[in-house]
Image 1 (cartoon, rainbow, N blue to C red):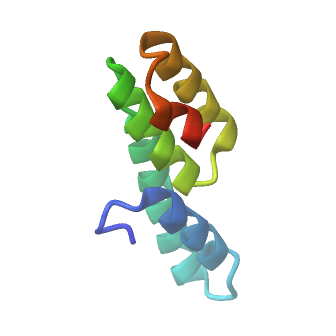
Image 2: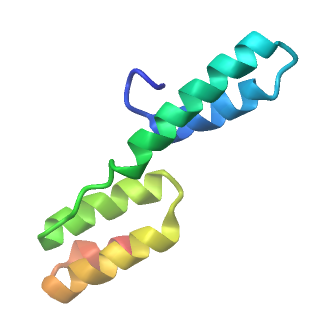
Image 3: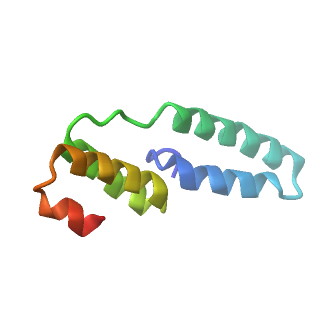
Length: 90
């Protein structure tokens, strides 16, 4: 997951591995978890258009980050209130 850019699920798995009985594996897992956190901190784009906000909201929904997705859908609707697909996703 880490190598394919899926940092959030990888972070959860590394944190779980860090709780294991092996000290060496726990240490390596914590290092990997820190790398995931660093990548997640700076990885969110800054959407500009209504379509950008829509696409980002759909990605957030897939990550189960519903509140953040709703904020981006509201911004998209403010920019393009005539777009039916935005209301559908909301």
